[in-house]
Length: 416
Image 1 (cartoon, helix red, strand yellow):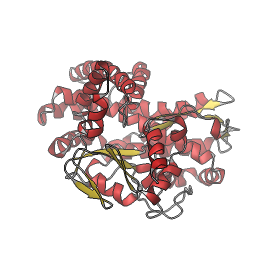
Image 2 (spheres, helix red, strand yellow):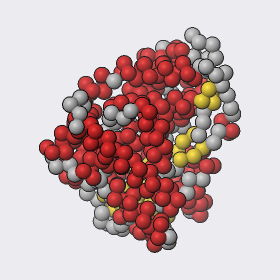
Image 3 (cartoon, rainbow, N blue to C red):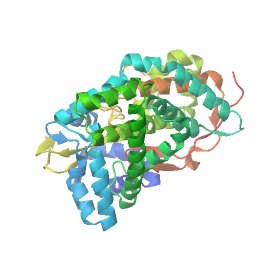
Image 4 (cartoon, helix red, strand yellow):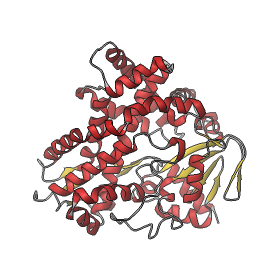
């Protein structure tokens, strides 16, 4: 009964492009047949209620996933180079808030939260609008343009500005972030080795950048919040560097997927694209929430059982690696009507793509702002935009956590 589910999950967790292109039939089978599914040292949750409960269960489920049975099994079979890479990535993960528990997590989050206040996010709108227009002007210079370029450059430009990264260094940040992203949610030695190299170079860069900014009387905003907090709440140099790296990485990789995959889903549902184009500014907020649900830019969360726990009648022993499938939870008919239909005017929320509970995404407001501005501008300026390739011709990559489309060629059509 479960052999086909096991095979499907193994393909997905191994980043098989065909599995990444459309994981939703697998998710449906899991919800219906085995909603809490055991796959060796991994337990996969597929239903909305279980994934939501797991996200807020900080007592039973730890975020320190590099200590899970799955990680230990993978490391045992690696070469010395692979083991060293795993140790380096785990050491980095131990200093970032998304893999911290309890007071350690709370302290890191308090420090970083000061940089993401509603006032500070609102102040960014003008810059986001300017950058979007500039990027779209560049895209319009070609008959067929790649919207994926806009999708990754926009959030990268914004978070780089927030952290004082010079414009000339943005592409290096993107390359390092892509390497780190390929290691998220996987135990593949090659991905870990690539992430180790990226983290070493990224860490050296950020340490030097922080030193320059610390010595400048001109830094403010997010930089001041992080640097000042180092003394105030005893943030270690390792935590400071890891936090900078994390914010630069997480501040653009996930929003890239929201814009790129979200736009792909809109253009393959032309009636929904037209609804957005009818009144872009008014429709964009609800449309972004629907794309967070339907497209699920972040497809899963990871935890490790801190002690024996039970979900859906399944006992999960301490040490098990637990995966909550956000992409499945967001299509659960138990939580949403017509879950497999894209509806940009869908009322209400309920999606879990920013997580839930203490680990709710720190940059949710920024991601929403960037998504809304990008969609509003695209729909307002080029309502006749259409895909320049068949959906089946697109190349999928990334991994089970951050599935991504390599390019997204479009014909913009006549400007409005």
